[in-house]
Amino acid sequence: MAEKIIRIGTRDSKLALWQAQKVQSLLASTGQPSELVSVKSEGDLDLVTPLYAMGVQGVFTKTLDAYLLSDKIDIAVHSMKDVPTQLAQGTVQAAVLPRAEAHDILVLGKEKWHKNNFGNWQRNAGETTDFHIGTGSVRRTAQWLNRYPHSQIDNLRGNVQTRLRKLEENNWDGAIFAAAGLGRVDLLPENHIVLDWMLPAPAQGAIMVVCKKEDVATAVICQSMNHEETAVCTKIERDFLSTLMGGCSTPIGAHAEVKEGRIYFKGNILSPNGKHSIDIAQDEDYTTNSKLGTTAATQLLKQGAQSIIEEIRKFEKGD
Image (cartoon, rainbow, N blue to C red; front, side, top):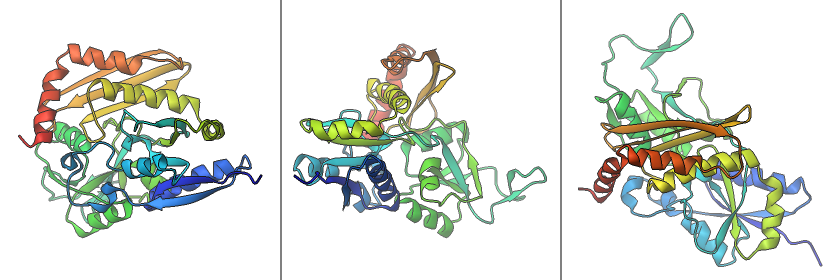
């Protein structure tokens, strides 16, 4: 009997295809043949409506979930930050690939900045103190407004090429991107600033492979791609998000990393307008069964995070 060809489901954007091709190359390195099956998600088709207003969890993943459950594909490859904390019924996490750079960057608007004598980017003389920024992320908006409350934020949707083009076409000071996304498709411009103060989305920079729960053979094949440390850290971040009721488009940031045998975690939750925020930082010895995300979120709830959660719910309802 011929060896089974694994059908890899992916969105058809340049970044999504890069991620799927990465999985394909990892499978090939073990001698496993595969083929790509590309689809368009609801989130790709509607580039106008803000993500928080689309009213659906998994706006970028549910189409692939449907393909998986109807046996049109064997595995689905996702940007892990887009995957709801509660996976679609009948699917399981089969692997998490090694994480890329997790943080956000500000790609600078042309004619707005210059490099000073120390080689650092600096706004041109005469620019107002208020920023004009493009982003479609509620989390990025909230964290930016928390730091720069008088900024103007424009909704920015689309794949990375579309968003870079819109930045070129608009008179913005900059637009916020995930460093990993631009880096993976070789579109990271020189004129950018790393926003090391901005906590990324839970699991940002990581790639998740999902298969059907009943498909044990495929799950076993995918295990060869799994990176334990990334899987542990992203689970902590997603536990934090889940415990705080968060979805993919809520203003909740989280980042866990392993250094010298310890896991260091930072998390926060903000009101959508950035006026209210609660932060937390905790660490513990490395363990594959860490409850750090859950305990950190529980601590934030004790510190009054519930009032911010109510603000988020009102915002999502349009109140």
